[in-house]
Each structure stands twice: as structure tokens, then as C-alpha cells.
Length: 134
Ligand SMILES: [Zn+2]
Image (cartoon, rainbow, N blue to C red):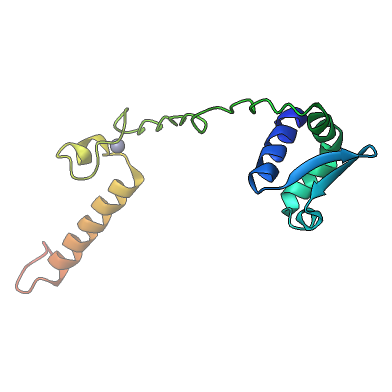
């Protein structure tokens, strides 16, 4: 936001609280005087930064409406979801019947298969009454 826009919104915000602004002896004065200490930190900062613009505004007595900022807060930017390297598009999800096929080389799927095979191996080794060919 440029200083002029800041100055306009500052003046409007302060006036909305019933503060009367005036230029006396070349200085910006706020009435009632205590309203200066009631400004927020941000308003103090704006006053310090844009004092000359605010004074010019108050002197002119004309407060143009502030330049409307982007009316809608920054239109949402759709961040494209990177395609799944296995599905080659948005991932179809584990519940899809083709998931295990498409994700065959997915490290997680490989690990699951290995673990399943290991469980089967141990079950087979531990099965009573079976011969193992030796
Ligand atoms: Zn996928």
C-alpha cells in the first residue's frame, strides 16, 4: 500500500472514532488530545511514516475514498497436486481395486508384500507335521 492510501485509511479510521483532525501552526493536531495516546502501535507507525501525506489530506479537507484493495482477498491460487508417480495422475487411493497393481513398485507396497511373504514363510516353517523336503 502506498503512503497516500495509508494516509487516507489512517484518517478515516481515526475520524471514525470521533477524533477531529486539524492543522495548527503547521502541526497536525488531534482533538481530543488524549486520542493521540489511544492510537494503536500500527497507527503510530503509520502516522510517523505518512505524516506529510496525512497533513496534506487534513489541510485539503478532502478525503477521497481509499483505493479499494483487491476486493476479494487474493483469489485462491489452486496449487496443482502433483500427479502420483504410480497412478500417473491424482492418486486413486488405497481403497481403489487397481491401487495395488498401479503401485506395484511403490516401496511401501513392496515392503507390505515382503512382510506378507515373510509371515507366510514363518507360518510354513512353524507348521506342525509338515515335511520340508529333507
Ligand atoms: Zn497412486
